[in-house]
Image (cartoon, rainbow, N blue to C red; front, side):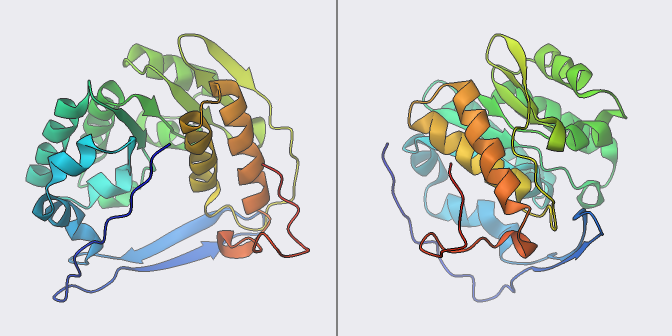
Length: 240
């Protein structure tokens, strides 16, 4: 697997975004964020300034989330989607919906962008909550069938302690084998996605990749703020 690090230009006229997270008794969280006009909201402009198409075409994997899209203007989203369509035959595109409805003017707009991205992406990594927020409550298998109908080619649809549904031409359910007491569910989806995609890039099959993702996510939720001990810490028992 190739890896490259590119230094991003600093945006001296922009401020960082600010996030606050409240956690409930079972680790469920509520977000508060201030990022209008922040440096993060200018990511597409910064990428274009460095040559977006060349950078994305050279990547082993292009990975982005629904938050990345929600904070763009409609014109910028259109430009990014057009670039992605041009990359379709040259590399892998992974999409995490990571839905935050408060960032969208109306829910229907979020739904339309989601459906377009499902069709464009090689790998889709939603949670059952994402799909319930977009389409209304349903069991996770029904959500999985909706993704297939929308044209998803590969997905891992997570459902917390209930495990996940994976699809790569065949739909199957995987149980969550790690049962832990969650203190903060922040970062669980990111942990799953990171482990899943790293495993897929390393050549693992979809089932093994999803199992690695669930194991890491189960460990992350046992630490406040999704901050796990360093690998050399004697408290770190993660085995991914």
